[in-house]
Amino acid sequence: MKNAILSTAYLGPVFYYSVIANSKRVITEQYDSYIKQTYRNRCTILAANGPQNLVIPVKKISGRKQLAKDVRIDYATRWQANHWRSIFSAYNSSPFFEFFSHELAVFYEKKWKFLIDFNTELQSLMIENLDIECTIELSSSFEKMPANEPDFRELLSPKKASENYGLNFSPVPYTQTFAERHGFVPNMSIIDLLFNTGPGAEEILLKQKI
Image 1 (cartoon, rainbow, N blue to C red):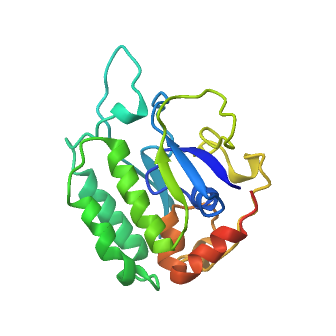
Image 2: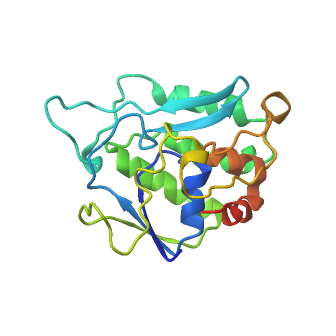
């Protein structure tokens, strides 16, 4: 693909990064209405007991919808410490955790005001570590039906199983930390792929069928 449009995502799933890896230019939507229970503020890691959701709490504004670009992170709870503890517990024994974890840990120490800024900087780190060559831009306005970019904004949802994306998505298996216990679990957060395969992650992303 030359172009694609995606919603913002917190450590998005493997499919999300497959779209990026297979595109030359990706537009991240920031003018859509914020929707709860999506990858915008949650990711799924593979922990010892199976898939585990990590959710970033956001500040609610009663009575009106918020645009994605205006959503603020809520630091009333110690979610950063909890998320990092869960990530460490799930991946500290994976082959490439020590190689990539130091840069990731910073995101659980520093505070960002807006969710989209946090997600965008985290995404930049993932793209750099994955060695993906793709231009990422934030949208300048909202287009309900984009004319020139394949629209993945609402197709990528935790509520939809990968086989129901309707996009011939065929996950490429790779060795996961708890494979003996759970077998291969597809479409986990991109850090599951990165920590388990390291330099081989980009090749796996490029092999995904979209």
